[in-house]
Image 1 (cartoon, rainbow, N blue to C red):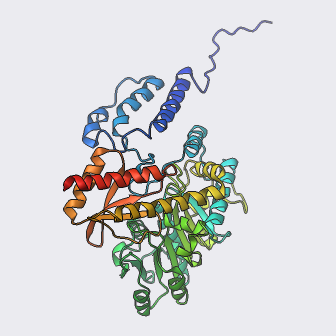
Image 2 (cartoon, rainbow, N blue to C red; image 1 turned 180 degrees about the vertical axis):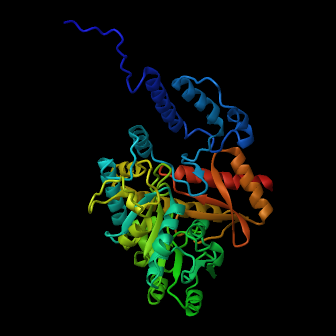
Image 3 (spheres, rainbow, N blue to C red; image 1 turned 30 degrees about the vertical axis):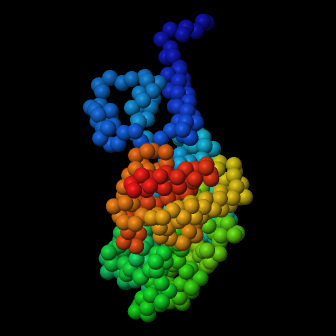
Length: 473
């Protein structure tokens, strides 16, 4: 008996020719973008108002081919892209997104894994667990700590503060999971007067209120004064949450961990460290003393997309007591498979559905090795010192910070001159430092953190600032 194919449905391949061309086109454009960074302007050609007309359109009734969409997207967006990945971009403490990490990120998007469960994505779970172990070892933190791979330091701070909140209240016989926060005992919260906004946001998100945190006086580098901490704790009736800082955003300075943390622990309190970029100094033997005692804390927040130069978005929430983090984060649904004692990515983050954001960091760590990570951090600190040394020799330029990491706070004789110099440097587009305010003065802030930045780039930055200042005279 013969079989007829009449009426059979043609099998559709998962990847059409148009899809393939679109993906290949995107890869080619991505490579070309990175290849041109050395000669491209370090600032966008267009600002928001310039690109608005290109994208503020109604949704077309008819679709377009995948390849055409990619080509048009590149054409429309290119003039409004800021060169955050350029070795001559020195603004906002932006890591440069290493090419090997970007390449791994291509795979993450193509693989399309939902990374909350080791059962659903075994390879990703193991990769991310390895990243966590490697980072704990590099950073010199307890190897048994709980770690969640999150979007960045804001969420990392928030999660750690939530874990601290739950643990401190549990010590007073209160269960946040069962009883919520209404009527809960009070938790005194202390934070430095020059703290970054990320942990303050975390206090708000955790229901503790940024506005009710007690701001502790700091010195001229933004470090919490130990005597001020002692005075604040002397008026504490309950175990406090104290938020310290590794790497002040303008100066790069860090708090006196070895002196402050034992004071808090003697009161049964919890110490959290916002170490978005500064915590990485603890990975470098010749620099780790600048963070002496940071490993005594109860929790830490650190970015991977800053000094590790991973693609956005990636950070770590680290909690010494892993169970405290899991209790605060885990919300398992009945439909999720039970995994016994298996390490589960979803147990240590607020998210359930998320992309495999730890994979690019795995690729970068494998590419650099521990020695490569340490060398990169040490080189950036040496480059920052070189920049400060060059600029400090120019009459009319002040360096407002002790250069202890990768941050340089630069000021001219008055705010108007500082603003004019920065505007000129940014407009020329050869380099791109950013603005800031420190100790009541407007500053030009240089953050040296891109994996590709070298001595030539730093000398160009110094030359641009000096020439802009001289031109004003």
